[in-house]
Image 1 (cartoon, rainbow, N blue to C red):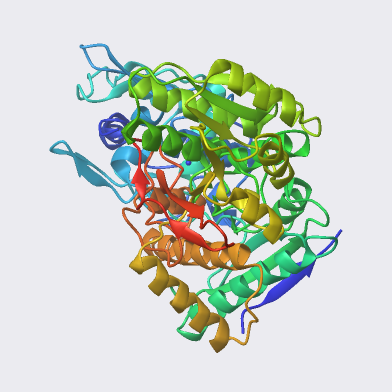
Image 2: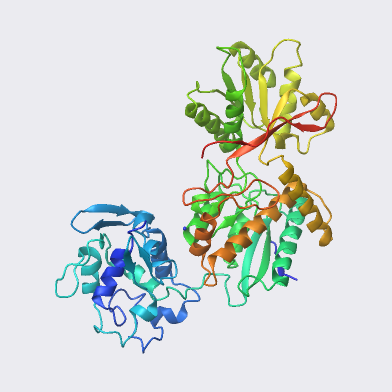
Length: 554
């Protein structure tokens, strides 16, 4: 079985220039004087030296150098700048990152017909390499000015990097470990993965349901030999009463987990800011967060990979569906009723973005303070505006009170769109009140393939003797585990967090089981752009499809 521990309490021309510089200069020994944090005696033969001898845990300087190498980001977070030869064309950030040409493990690649040689420590820091020792001054001349020893001009694709002494030292510190650096949680035989889940308090049963699915998913992988012979170990931190998970996430990082999967995640305030900042600084991927994450408003600082669309996407689908529906010419405006908080603001932004894309009038906003929902006043405002449709975000109680304040009528009434989760835990009375009156926005497809996926999940649960409960948490944990395992396999045997991020970015149309097909990208951290619509059948509490999957433009 998997080891389960319950705890309480990351440009095509980018680095060709660096390759040309290092290759032309013929680095042969340790880069002397780069900085005290990376200084070391010359290596003997191909043996590692200095910090390369202790790459199991990167130094702070090497961690900063890794961000520079992989992301083109300076210690301050600002993008590095490099200018190409005589043209002066500027490259910034990831377009100037070394890994773009040399590969994430520094093994070298060929980009644009130019060979980028390896940058491994054995290649750079071997004492028997021709050329002899290299000084910080000649290295700086190569990287900053494109000049080799003796004043020879380096290749035109060699960017002239804007690096001061400290940044140069950071880069050197990481180059000493390139290809052999081990991130926290990675060993030759095991991989520690974390999940922040509520195991005590009112959400404990849902958290335990997700935990059991994750553990069983990893058990199946381990029974087949793991991933590149590494067993997957699950460490769970109790988020207690919170569906935010920030404090538990910080504790997991202190326990040196490699990545997070299916953790509850809010990412909107307080401790969440600290947790999100640390995830970004340490490049820790979080795959398939649960709870109230905001994919559009909070893309996760580049490391949080959402499997399902957020509230912003649901609002975009509502506008798309409304725009394609037949209506009288000149029908009224669209009203967005939403809480005055980050989630509600994301809902409004999504509606306005889709209206702008379709050249429609911008929706009218009527925010309300959470906990102070005046249904009668808001319904009266909608009537006075003569709106064509209302998009309502909030909680089940707000939906119930809206329906009570806007009783059924024999005349035309505005279409009402609301996220489907508003009915998830509410009584049948609310479902009956919503019958034929509310178009429910689902972040999942409602087709035959999804039905097959749900049956596969049911078979998985039965096989592992896990009782079916809290279906949304179980399905989300199952899908997140499948996405993570697939990305781990694609990342390769030399596993790093930047490598896992790159593998996740390479997923295209991946079927995670329950839920929509997942496609990520370099600038895309939401796996699915769309939703489905259903409505409650009149006179019952059964939900019936209204539309197939409605996809919107990323």
